[in-house]
Length: 186
Image (cartoon, rainbow, N blue to C red; front, side, top):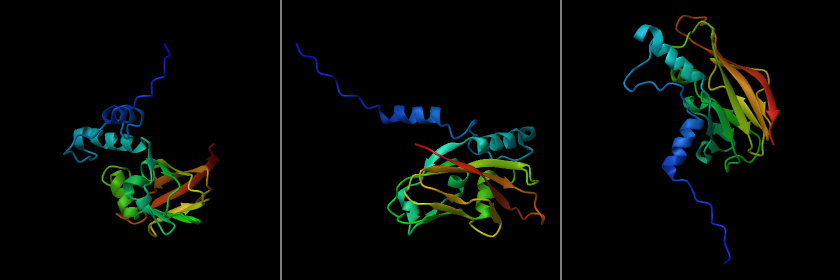
């Protein structure tokens, strides 16, 4: 009797989804639906939950629909998720731009009524580039400044620190993105 090896079985989609949620939760504590976090709700607990979840990093792979004419346009959600992965995409054929959304939309995504606007809020932002071309991070508008190196070589990951500095003008928030370094991966 000759034994043939059995082909590997694929996991059902619902099992894969559950595994991904365990490995990359995207949120440390899920905010109950219908609740808008604010600094006073439950003695500030809702604000803490929102800010702790902002620090939670999850990988996001940019779909080919977001790479058009050597420009990768990010949404506010993608810009704040923590790890942005840019694979080889059809819309990238030369050095390309990684376009951030507007400052207002990034701050709204972080929770404008919850995050401190006094210069104490910051979170890491990574871009992993395997597109075959060099990418350059660019601000969505004049209220976002990028300091230090803004390019990401192919086969590398660059880390920035996104901070919300104290507002110079009351009610007008800005974002500062500072280069923290880069590394290559196999």
